[in-house]
Length: 430
Ligand SMILES: Cc1cc2nc3c(=O)[nH]c(=O)nc-3n(C[C@H](O)[C@H](O)[C@H](O)COP(=O)(O)OP(=O)(O)OC[C@H]3O[C@@H](n4cnc5c(N)ncnc54)[C@H](O)[C@@H]3O)c2cc1C
Image (tube, rainbow, N blue to C red; front, side, top):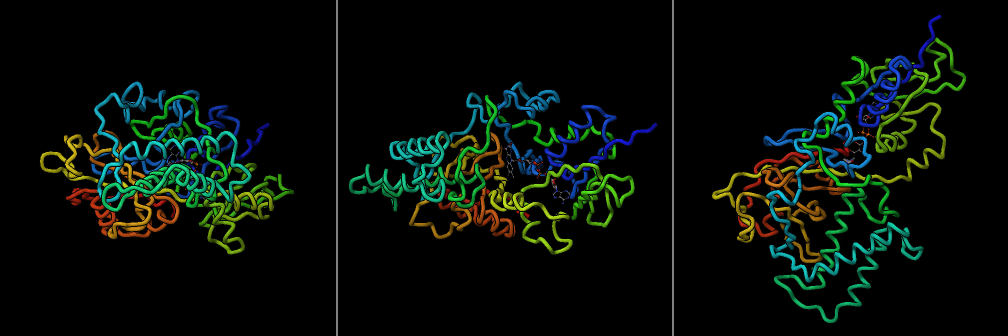
């Protein structure tokens, strides 16, 4: 007697879908009849190693967040995805460029002004992490932080004193605090920090945080390569998942689940594993009732699941990569700093003035926390955008983006801004 294997359709070939397929297949290759249907033309989803200006860049995930016990680290080691025993990127023992904290206008931030604020921010986030938000904190993490900053500034400063240019101590401390908020926006992908009521929703593995030298995509490629040919089907977008509560028959009409694709083909399934992003699910709810636009369910999802999808926040996060030109003498023209010699762009943290803005700097750059080389010594540097700024940048053309980043560098003290040659950026919101 031939026993029919349960048919499992996995929707999405990002790391979640590929891991599910890999686990089911490698547990026992004869147990399931398995396919993975992927809307896009490539596997990996938000893991996408690419190439720009002769360097390897990560459009999405870069970091293994803690190596001890992390399955991704174990795969990366097994497939020799590290050039070195451990990644030397950002390893301070190698010849990395310096980290500099620059204020709008071009002056270096003096640690004696910034350190008390950095300590305050760390303490506040530790409070949120360990105890959650105090009930008096207001709508979210954003208000809690701002209230504490205002108390700090009121308690510790007498009359404000001038620093250089438009800067006073109070403005500088506010701006350094905003830099930390901008980093938090990137890490949490929250457009508005008041949408956050917890900080640390991620649980890191213990140990170092490291990137994968040969590219994060090595992981997804490895998972895919261990599946039988034909398991992953690209360019197949699911538009409807029909669950038939009285299903169980062998004919397509009686199948427990019918997965309807964009081209109207149908995959029947005993089980479906859905791994699309929260954004895709949110879009589906917005357009519920309209046929054919995004992913729908029939019958619709139960209301508690819809509520969870609506309430869970997740904003857009994008990266912008810039190719830097070779400069005469290999120097970057920042404030004549000797330690920027040797052609290495610094790890540069950006402190924007809270009130007096350099006019040329576009609003969509003003909450980017840093411009960093992708590794110490690379001529490709990158910055981050979150929320409204990310959505704006996704819609811009290259010339506008280049002049925006050049104006920003000029506003931070570069006296020649033409060393940014070319840019490329992600559009995860689309
Ligand atoms: C800029 C950025 C930086 C990041 N950095 C890190 C980092 O350093 N470290 C880290 O651990 N994480 C990082 N992340 C998060 C990490 O990339 C994601 O958590 C992870 O890749 C999500 O994998 P997934 O399989 O759940 O979803 P996805 O990768 O989104 O995969 C879902 C797949 O489903 C497909 N799909 C969608 N709709 C349909 C449909 N209707 N039919 C068929 N297929 C469909 C999509 O095309 C996609 O391929 C980062 C993310 C971004 C955007």
